[in-house]
Amino acid sequence: MRSFGSDNHSGICPEILKAIADANADHALAYGDDEYTQRLTARIRTHFGETASPYLVFNGTGANMLCIDAMCRSHEAVVCAETAHINVDECGAPQRIVGCRLLTVDTPDGKLTPALVRTRLHGFGFQHHSQPRAISITQPTELGTCYTLDEIRALADLAHEYNMYLHIDGARLANAAATLNCSLRALTTDAGADCMSLGGTKNGLLMGECAVILNPELDNQLPYRRKQMAQLGSKMRYMAAQMDRYLQDDLWRRNAEHSNAMAQRLYQAVKDLPGIRIVYPVEANSVFVQLARPIWTKLQEDYFFYDWIEDDNIVRWMCSFDTTQEDIDLFVAKLQSLLKEQ
Image 1 (cartoon, rainbow, N blue to C red):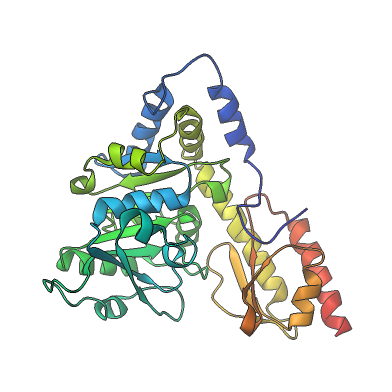
Image 2 (image 1 turned 120 degrees about the vertical axis):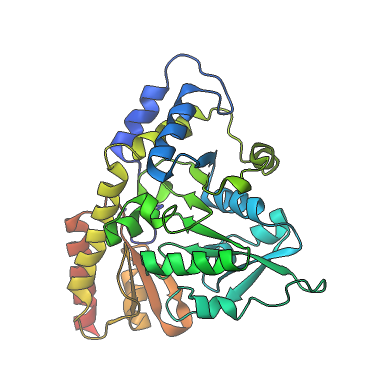
């Protein structure tokens, strides 16, 4: 099966699979006291700065929750886009695990702006209102759009003006860095972020994500909080070995550049087809299109992908690090044949 449903559907990058096998030798101390996790800590600091503290977790939701728990208490709130992953796709985890509130903002392209965030910045010091404490952005957004470095810095400056924090959900951070042709640090530490979720599963890892604390004042008893969230892995060396290899030799960038390039190939092939409307700018590894329901339901007989906004006939096609040019060409050929039949 070749899927355009999610970059989670792809397999394991060969270099990552080898790193897992290489780590599967002899015994190693558990719960992060192993040499692999120590090497990863050093690697993270070369990418994000000497004050960065990594906390490996099982999944992206775990990374987001650990970051939010570092920033917020239960009477506080996180401002995020209505379409943010923490709001739409994490089953109320912030409310259940941290106990805080999400203050959502409707956006035209998935991106927050200082003006949009300011609509939620009120009620400070009023004991009947949840207190805004953090801004969370998804980079790239759930709509495939990317924040520029200046846009991130503006949100960080706004957060700090109000004694708040900025969190970046970076499940696909590599794709954004590839699009913007910048370093991971430029997108995060240098742009003023206080903490971030560093993803890898969507870009070639087997499993395991990383919460990275960039602002030392947030690095408060997080080992205990991670344990309470059931996110502490015993054989952590296998997660650490993956992430460490991922961050070596620009593997993260090569994988992301490829998936982005495949999305661009798909976009260029379909953008002028009759009956196709590109809904959002194609800035990372996803293409959102609007087309007639009979077409996309027929196409789903051969390919898996999500109907993103069913009422508007908007679907999402996602490319992965292992999507091939042939995958794209066969998909487009099938789509063209269906369009001709209608």
